[in-house]
Image 1 (tube, rainbow, N blue to C red):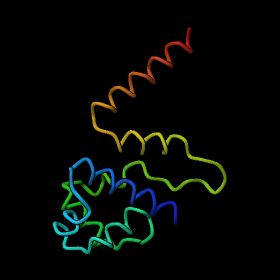
Image 2: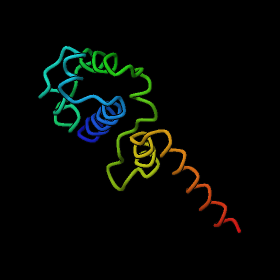
Image 3: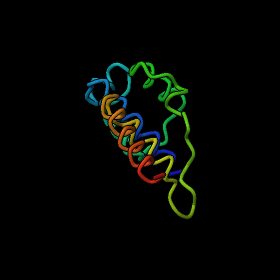
Image 4: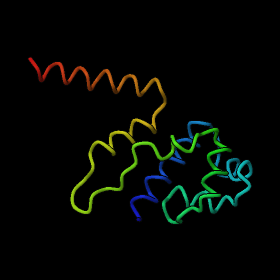
Length: 112
């Protein structure tokens, strides 16, 4: 469960930063305490459904986007595809396009 809270918290943080909001601004828009937002982002608190909904509304983030392709890390080893997805999700669209171009270039080189 800890991994799931950290994944969701990281996605909330990414969305907040992408929106250009401080934790205090997000908390005010969502009607939550700034300390609570910080704890959610660090994965220290398990959010209630209501607080997740309020946070997503404040961010203009659909709930389904927050939970998209989510799968807690396996007990043993890493979930590399999920880590890659979350890394890409945390970057601005222009950087996402650049990273995709890099990956496609590497893939083309490996096929030669």
